[in-house]
Length: 103
Image 1 (cartoon, helix red, strand yellow):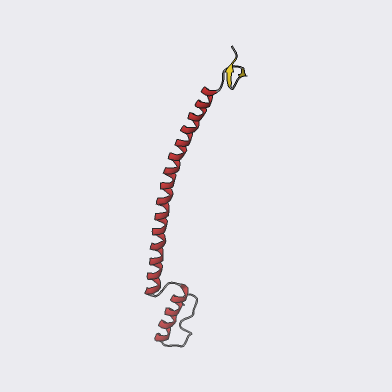
Image 2: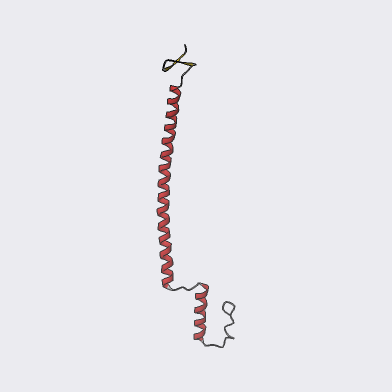
């Protein structure tokens, strides 16, 4: 018995048995043509290369994003300090065209 098939009761010659096993192997996916295998390997390598390129671009983008975020934090702190220094310290009144602090 091979894979649940009773071989001795088939009544066919050994040649037909080998052909049947060959067809069974192809249908189960145990045996594939060389061209199909080569195509699958080529596709695998192509997708692997695309993934590697994509990952390299993603890592490079993360580095640039980190640098941009650091520059944004620095600019935010600088602008807050400028606003703080330009803010008047006491009540103000308008005399003429300029704003002056009241002593």
